[in-house]
Image (cartoon, rainbow, N blue to C red):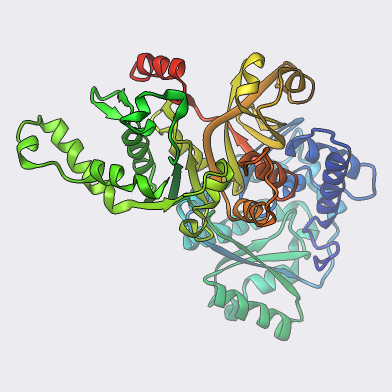
Length: 526
């Protein structure tokens, strides 16, 4: 409510997006973010506002979005930034006639009739595309100084090529503040906002402290109120947890002599490895720094034996590639934390046991009886981490399955946001019946077909998930019969702060059932 009215900041677009989102959620319209944007735009066109088509991108919130609008085609893509950027947006306390600006500039399209209109087309066409592409690169690189210089350059180009087409664009208030030498000491660069004119100005401050000083100067010396916008990189995922406690009844009697996570699998590098080693190698390859193994206290010695150095007589007989693997195993121990789950009260309880290890950070959760094989250079763990950095919400890896398999999995229902790659989850149900899945959990694809999606076996668990688990366990009211499940907590998160389902480019392999283990042994190293 503190945005300047008629200042070029499109507060009307924000209101329209909020209305569209409210209807979407209240009446379960199953619109994606892009659908909400389109509904908001159509609604706004029925009001006196003449807000630009791109202003609905505020639907993405405080996230950098590359959005392109070409005729009726709209594309938008969230991207990551390399460091924090501190903007100050000032209300110039002057006047701006947006309707006149847009009317004058529209005269240059579709066909330019003179040199002035040709320069407008050039500035808003090829020049703009080049500037935007460079801006995205600078944002991703975290180069605030470079971006500030680009803002100055973009403003200069606009003034030379576009200003002559409309007297409103001479904007004396804007240009006075852009050239203020006092302001320049606190900023990397500055430019007008939107269609320009004397509405608002944006400044890229050199630091948070500079942004605060700039706001005070604008208010006290120039009588210009302002708002501050700080965009920071999404927190990355540094930690992972793997629940491993339990006997492994379904693969008994093998588990009478070896824990399930130590069952051997032939890896793609030709080495026969315990399943746990394959998981750990993928985690550390993905950039994970610390891993919590959730085990029973009586199981610690078995794990310590695995990470302990070999006796010299055994090392002497190993080939160089196996010696390298042995050294890697010993090095891993430095990054392993044991979390003891002595009461077996369900999967959610196991995850909850690692809450102190997580330390209010997002953590990558792997199931202890699944392996993952990527179809691209980034392994599935890395893909999950990158997806979290991009969207900043609790994340569930998902995969398409046949309907008749639904009763064996946690199933999800939601709406696609990105070409059947990212789903906004609306409901999660643990091991539903086939009939329930068919009636309530089908997800409509881009071509109108219904598909069914189950958990892939990887999650990014955020602090709010731990809070949900804590509340459930404190109440001593298990969500899944006599156990505390993770699915129920994630279902509540989906309805509250939001949950995304992400489809990794790869395949998950189950080692927790005899038939599945046999298939994994046959197929994993192909």
